[in-house]
Image (cartoon, rainbow, N blue to C red):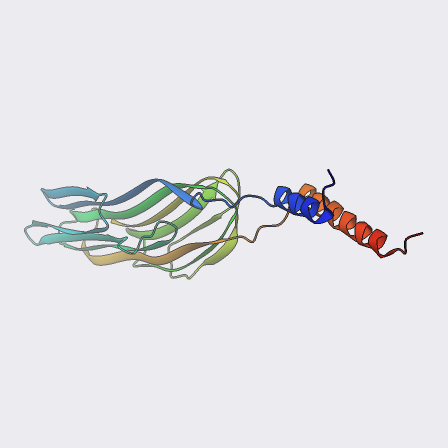
Length: 238
């Protein structure tokens, strides 16, 4: 039985074309959301930690005589999608002390661990701020994307900034980490305020597939066979 060149070429084309990947481009392993507060004024102290809610927000106040201190923190992940991150958060400490006994700590943390199942382009951008830093007040922020398969990014600071990054993530496991924190020492007299915050977006898009060399060789061989067959058919019969 003779096999037509057209059928042979179709067979080569199907063997050279990879089957579509139906798996999600990203598999989420875990998401951790936390805000933590620790506040003191004289003998009045309060500590609290909230976690694992799309919207976290809290404020604590400590009072002892004329000394007062307030710590607040917020973390908003209500716009979190399976393959994209939109996160906002902030922290602040405000205090007033006549005896040098008021101060505190506030922190907002977001961490996600996920698997990238096929090459993806990532795009990151955000606004970060920190203010009120001096010898006894400290606010700072951090944003990190890291994995063993590809180099991501790492940004941190104690100022106002708008970092951006783009790159390629190869298949593997990655961690995306965000944090803002503020603190004020208790050994001071007077008043003060320090704060930190961020609003970020991290998105992913598919990378156009490039045919493998082996597939291109098979396809080229099939096309060459078809051209040769057509030439033979055009030759006049003896």
